[in-house]
Image (cartoon, rainbow, N blue to C red; front, side):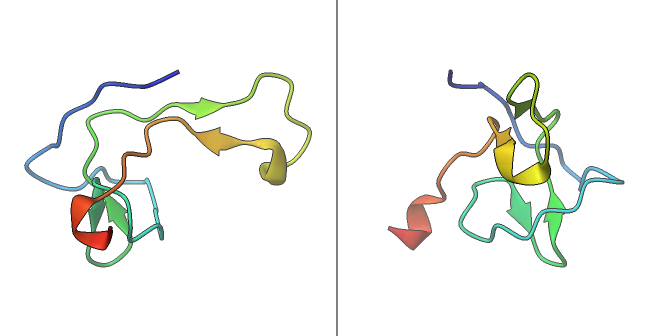
Length: 61
């Protein structure tokens, strides 16, 4: 499932992201996505979750 999103003009407070290859990554480990979606239903630990908002940053290809 692909999540469509857009960048905010500022970072999303309270959301920490260390995935510097993501389009929504901002310096200081912040996220600029307007909203995020974390999947999978019935996950039992963080290793079973997935950020569906992730979009590759073209500069890292």
